[in-house]
Length: 224
Image 1 (cartoon, helix red, strand yellow):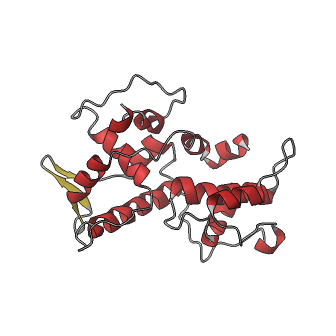
Image 2 (cartoon, rainbow, N blue to C red):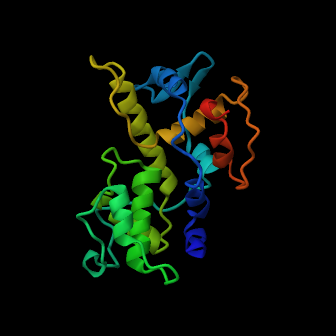
């Protein structure tokens, strides 16, 4: 499916999932979130206002900042959900994978490819809090399967901002921060890039994959 992913513009981003994106530096994350201003939608650091942009997303993930805006409510399904053999009663990540993986050596079917994209979007991109593959990712997965020029970078950036809003709000709850979800991995990589020189973040490991996000995964303090 690599040629299809290249044409859709998600090949490099999918390769990034091969790296440990869930290796976090909790102190760095919590310290940064304290500086998040929910009114200005920016980090108010001593050096000034700093915030993630589409160009940051492009540099880290390889996604293009261009593309069509995705409207799930008006997207015309070219493949009926009834035509696909997707099992909806097995939603946890492992169960979903086992239910839809094809036989080795056989061509990847549309059902298997869409199921993979749904899992990838749920577990590796947007990181659903339920640790399950929700049905609402079917429309987006189908659009990517059909090689639609969806601007995935905008969806990812919006999800990151939602993540920051929820994380900032949770810090001021009486019972403290709850389990945070959404793309915290992206926040970690972005912070690694922002503070790489300030914190002298270095690593002796050089990833074979030439993508900024892959290099940034090696700079997490617990990995240095």
